[in-house]
Length: 135
Image (cartoon, rainbow, N blue to C red; front, top):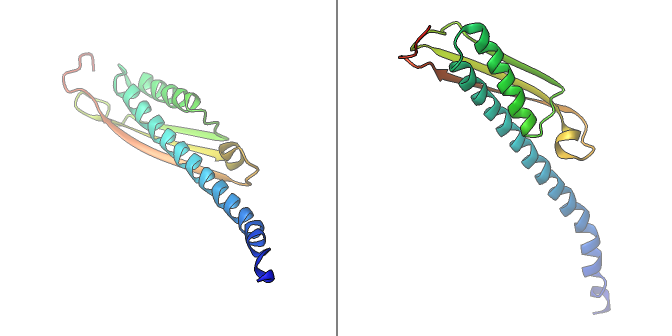
């Protein structure tokens, strides 16, 4: 009976670090999922902003600005940000496609000292109004 008195304390000491590491992993995975959603939202916002522009060059500028603003408002700081706006079908009834690629530091993302980077990408296609004037 005397052998079992300290076993609960020993089990707690051994299990606590494992539970804490698991909890930190869950937090890191959640933050990564949130960043991925922000990149998806940036691609969607960029495509929408580009689709309501009046000409292809302003569509590219509007899409790039919208993606940057969306990521900034989401608190995502990209080590490298690449926004591509495809205006090859920029006509009434056509489409505009955007692709956003953001490389984030995992240490910034999880607010832990996790080494490495992760590149998150998203694409979105937005139709251009069929009845728009001036195109």
